[in-house]
Amino acid sequence: MKHLLKACLALCAACMLLCSAALADAPAYSPELTAAKAAIGALYDQYGFTAEMLGMFTMTVAAEEEATRVHFVSPMLPLGRAGEYEVTIRGDQVEASWTHDDKDASLWTSGALDCPYWGAKQLQACLDTESYIFGQDGDLPEYVPDQYESLDMVVFTPEKDELPAKEKYALARAAMADVYGLSDKTMSSLESLFGEERILICGDGRRLMEVTIAGKDLCCHVLVDTDTDEVYWLQLSSGGNG
Image (cartoon, rainbow, N blue to C red; front, side, top):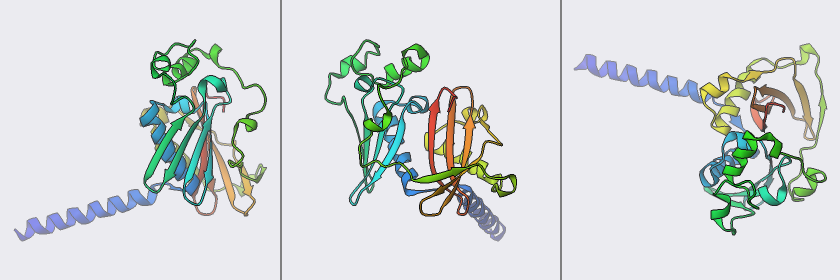
């Protein structure tokens, strides 16, 4: 009995060490990216989005006193049809809304591209038939609410000896898979583009390394803090063009 107890205790200790190691290896996220991950999950659950569909939209975050809001708008699709998505996060509560929530759902759930409102089925058709994808009239910023401000930073290409350790690539890949819920199979088809690094210096002095991960259908730019290893932000693009 004593031998069995000792074996159980040893197994428990080993499990705790394994769990601690796994947690230590998990990427740490900025508050903005934490909110974005929750918002992406809400669009998956409520509107049937996939990562490829999200790759047609840009994400911006607005942190307010009582809530954080994540806004999604597409520079590739007609605004009137695709609409805009906004996810509001208050503590543990996550609420998603869409421009066309008040419209007849039987129209956009039909999947017909001549429908005036494009839901997930139309977005998938746009991915399958690229001729339906076209840019907005005018610049995208005019479609983004004023409270969603872009990050103020200076970008430069570092010298070889200024580059952070390659562990940043592993963190970037782990974050991309986690935030977008991508499978091992999908991630194995994507390459980290070595030699494409840029360092972005934020207004508050933080240095962010930009890691590009791309394949045939997806491209993701990930920003990793060079000092803390916090994953600050990422943006996915469909089509692999980034």
